[in-house]
Image 1 (cartoon, one colour):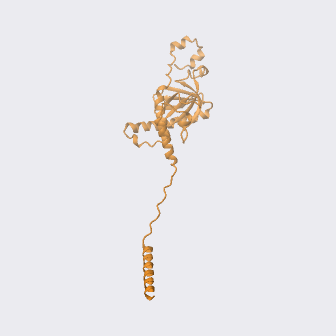
Image 2 (cartoon, rainbow, N blue to C red):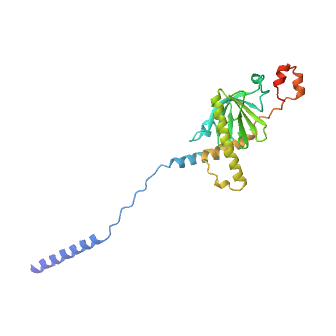
Image 3 (cartoon, rainbow, N blue to C red):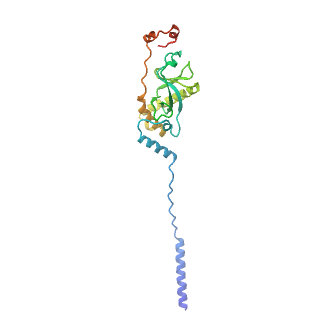
Length: 238
């Protein structure tokens, strides 16, 4: 009996020592479960414009060009290629200008038929251009080249819209000219552009060549054939 008690005591001691040893071993931490995190907003935007670029067919509607950050300018105006007749305004209402929806995004001005159009009719490169307000008509802005030639005339519903367009157009024209110089110098990789602006420029490059032809200026002979009165001829710019 004594022997059995001693054996039982020895067995219990060994089991106690084994448990003590196990408690001293470092415990393994359970693996951290992988979380299915939703993609960040910037990643979703990047993916969105990447898909657009892959399916690009030379056009985009107003909402797409706005992107997540919106446009620099939006508004309606009567658009005319070149100058509008004479400065006195005698031919303003006889001009062939048409109401169009304008959107400035980056260094380009997109011209839509209206705000619901599926694609811009054409795009105007603002770099190396200068917007000026007509001295006689505060609602009118002319877009000139650096040489002073009038490329477009915009007649807005009011002077406030005209002023806003003028400020935005000149700002983006300056930025666009700087970016062009950087690219020419081989520093295009330093340009820090949003994905939406890069996509808008891609659309613009495909639409720049769709601009309407510039109308010719009226010659002195053509003015003479109009039988204009001396009062009108006095204000006519040839």
